Amino acid sequence: MEKRNQRPRLLITGKAYDPHIGGIETVMQQTAEYMRRYAKTKVLCCRDDFGLTKKEKVHGVPVTYAGSFGTVASCPVSLSYFGEFRRKVMLSDAVELHLPFPLCDLALLLSGYKGRVIVAWHSDVIRQKALLRLYRPLRRRLLKRADAILVATKAHIDSAPDLQQFRDKCVVVPYGIDPAEYEIRPHLHPYDAHLYDKNAKKILFTGRLVYYKGADILLEAFANLKANAELFFAGTGVLENDLRQRAETLGITERVHFLGRRMTPELRDLFAECDLFVLPSVAESEAFGIVQLEAMVYGKPVINTALPTGVPLVSIGGETGLTVPPRDAAALTAAMDTLLADDALREQYGRAARARVLREFSLKCVMAQTRKVLFGENEA
Image 1 (cartoon, rainbow, N blue to C red):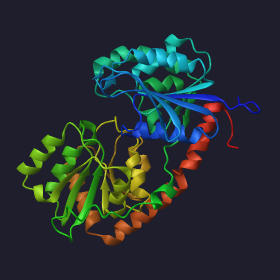
Image 2: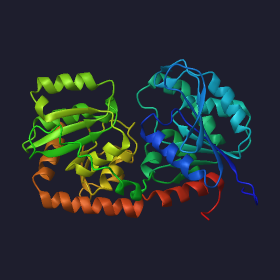
Image 3: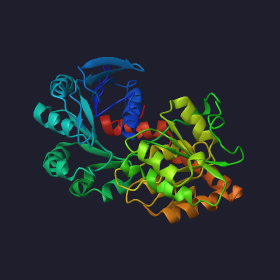
Image 4: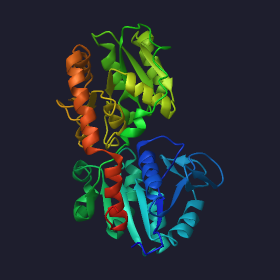
């Protein structure tokens, strides 16, 4: 596609973008910042609050935040998105759409765009069943139109009914991180100001406090822990007040710490200085869990859940940590006690975890594969 002295034009679009925090937003930002070396790259998303369209440059990438009236069923209500999409896509050689996001499906199909279409499939619509019934015919039309479908693991294909008839279009490219970036951190020692017992082991959870993350199950499991440990929640969400009240009811408020939203430097210190990272997700909305990689690159063992998605394929039970059934608080308690009581086992799993990240999830390798799918080219 690339002509001499002329770089291809790429549009990347999805529901949200930096400063919004989330796995899909992280992948979009990684892709945009990497591809700008090889293509004229632009990003289109929606505002996640009420307001008019605004345009900014984020780390050198032009980003348009389409005006929005707010959100309904986790989807922005934006009319201006359609006009912005058509103007930008008609000047693009390729467009990458990050799903689930019904607006971009509809915008693409209404635009009449004839260029290369890549769908980045992150997860199915899990909770909004009524929305899914309306959205499914539209999504199937988009999948039929797509030239390729990017998925992070084979489990993404196997667990998504709508992908079965399009398996030949699916290309497995995992999410990744740049290990070198994680070597640079400010050493803030973020736990020191919060620990009730300085000798306690530190269990970390990071992510939004929403239903599918399983933070409530983690809290129940932690309440029955035998080990001397304290639990840290880094993130905010609609369940935060409920979780705080539950911790008070369980009598564990001194050992449970709600840190709120933390910026990247402090998050990296939290990963680096914890003893154990837990991703207790309970629904298929959790399709991968990039936060696992962030803990693993620091040599931390991970406890995750056996969802039928890519989650247990990132950190491998019995190799880089332990895997327990979703919603099983007793099993989660036992797994945490096992690892917290055995320093040698934690170190063994931690070494294997870091080695796995370096071997399988290096961002440079992942982005080279992504570039090939986007433009049909090999890495130069």
